Image 1 (spheres, helix red, strand yellow):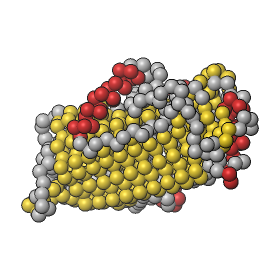
Image 2: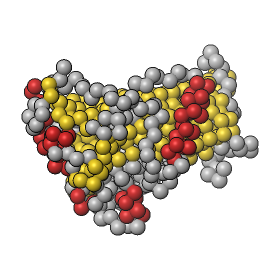
Image 3: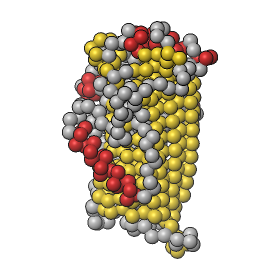
Image 4: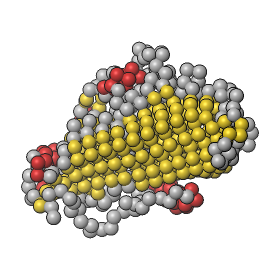
Length: 482
């Protein structure tokens, strides 16, 4: 049992897409009526809440309560100093197993603060950490080394509300308590061009190992919501991430960036940009930094993005992305379902990517590979740095209400190689041609899929015997007007 110092899952979804549809209509559309009806209203977790009176006792040998350090939790009092004092106390206990900081029910208003190693931040049910909205209270930090001079502005960037660097063994968990960035003022100032620095994430952990985020709600981030940067062994489980689907720019849900050995599972994400975006640096700066994102497992999710995509890779992928599995994911009411995006100048590679058991419900475009996503940090990028896209498979792809099921837009400089489709049946809303769009693509279809594939792909039967080999891999049938 942990020593108290007075001072100082959700079960995995079944692979059946029919089961995922049931979960989708019950839980996701419950979210629409209970949460999205009032964009800035109270939080909603698709996985339910903890019962009242549950213990906050954890596995650390020492526990603290934020109130022991002067925390008030009335939503008005600035509790920054209380968080700083509590974390300072925990930082002295690393060699003794670390400590847990309990945050009880209440609204805990704070400026950004830093975590420490061997620490658990535990949010009780109805506990909400609120980010102070005055950007002058948010510290400035150097630009990320793999992004050059800055993501939105050249020069320093705002730090995150909850931050950590060079840490080991950090847990953020609870009984579905929440961390609320109160991003509305940030989004307004961004649109009005009143900010002089790149906005900060809600939670950012950098150059760290053994990170766990579980059983909490993250909402209304000023910018990207959870951004692990150059980390190893990261687990995100049973997390709900929310932001308005419109008017909340760049509020990506989870952005593993130059990270290795990552698991994202059993989450509900509905935000104003990509629900998940795997990254690894931007153009020449990412190439020089040279840290790939690899060994990433994404499974058992329900996601929505009306602005971007449910699960993306890129466009900042210059350090390389490999060995990624995306499985048992439902994407609903979204602009795109899954997307790989890159451009000339990125360099790097995207390879060994597996998509399995995906359900698309009411998506404008299902599968997207785009090679002309021409956003650059500056004009000094290498015009001959062509990314490599290869060994990408799609198996068990189902859905309904999809306008364009597939759009793979390779180019002469950036062809897409060794793409495989198997067991695909996606109901479409557009009955004319150009619903399976390809350009500069080489790959194969195994068995029968719907809709019929583009002529760029080889056809094999279910026993993987060749039926018809393509002679038109460079044919272009891309129609963005569809």
